[in-house]
Image 1 (spheres, rainbow, N blue to C red):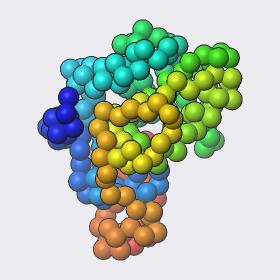
Image 2 (cartoon, rainbow, N blue to C red):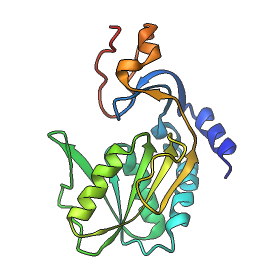
Image 3 (cartoon, rainbow, N blue to C red):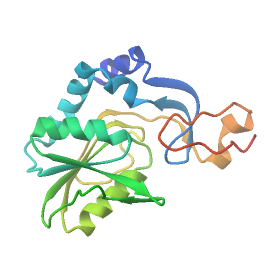
Image 4 (cartoon, rainbow, N blue to C red):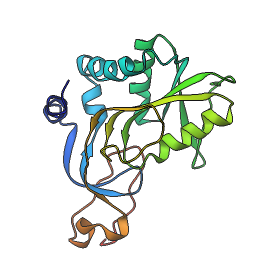
Length: 196
């Protein structure tokens, strides 16, 4: 599916928002992809995840792992379509960890799947967990790459939508300077903007 058609689906489902947002990375942006809004529709979930699964189908993936919370639904569906185990990593005391009895085996080929990549911080943390377990990162797949491909985390990396979306460090955000109220619709709470 072409990027324009996919963006239309995001807009129709109110998953692409305009405003002033604090991203999970801590950066600020005038656009926000609320993937949960589009992924709640099974037909869109299946279509989006099949693009990721199809890209990695011949990569010998044994397991799909996703960072919580945003990547869980996508990772689970990609894993289902690939017919492999799916697990997730989550934060405990501010650090990404593998818990809940999940584990990775030495030499296991692991696909890291995320909903949105801006800086790639969460994905990089999950990749480090995979490597620390002696497993191998088979690739990185995501629904939206907000960096338009400038954030490269793995040799084999795929995004359903790749485009450049404005984002700024909090301290140089023009929206904060202009007093635009900030929202934090993601999984981590926003701190007050510098203008507050």
